[in-house]
Length: 404
Image 1: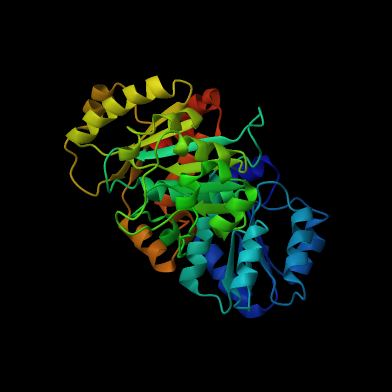
Image 2: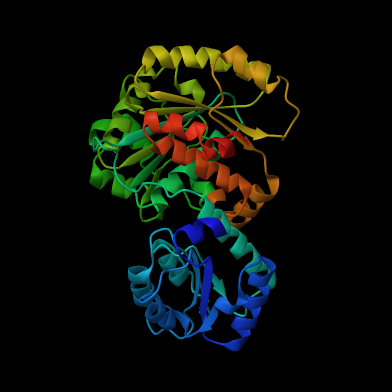
């Protein structure tokens, strides 16, 4: 990270604080990471705006907003003098969840409450380093201006497909892209639960009358954990909903793609046999697997089915929750049997999963500094790219992250 900053003639780090206690706490934490404690200055966010208007912005910036009368406006002023790619951490003395969310939506990496806790400060600095090493995700439509639809299918139950779908939808939304998450597990879906929300009540109506689905219908039917993320899901009583028939599912997905830049569909595998038309709307299909004999068999069958039903969609195969149990099939043997190299491998991390669940957040929000979150972010970056860029990424250093 230091070499990259030097090439851009930028300091690695700088901080602008309002009091001596915060300055001393920061100096100790940054010294542990080998950063210069002399880059901790007084003046708070106002001082940072004045100073950075006349000098290159550091790669990582800490600003104290505790003396700010309008933190939101001051953060915007700071954004005007920051260089692209700068990671900003704010500290303050106001314990307000609305302020916290506003700061994150404005692009701030994190907000720490005073008095500064040594462990929290270390975690925040580590998270910042991860953010600096993670490539920025594009926040615009594809070149052709079309919406993108990603179908995420677990090769078997309990393999973590729903977790990946929720996290990928969250990442797309928080990068500024209007995104819809459609959870088609009608009885046991967990999408709303992962965001600590109650599910909406419109999915059953949408499946029965997909022609009714428009922007106004969706606004009333979805739940929204973020201004750019709409979740359409249900927790219907078992046996209390009519499964989609004919082209209803495909019509619903198509209608949603007309209203959102991204549509992420958590699609239970048992729905595919009766609803092959839904694959035609997909630009990307992600098969989530493990290293079991049954999964190897079903990957082969699913690949063949997708090739016939959606020949133009990109198909990714992701091995998830690795290390949670012994593998029945060696990795190379698995790849040889399915005749497809794995596009990503994601290790199991129970601590990150439990931490996020306790906070009522998805992993990329509730445990964003974890290696698990970094792996999911890398997978999302791969999905964002064009087909040619995806192949280049898999050959790059990011590909190495995905393969870990």
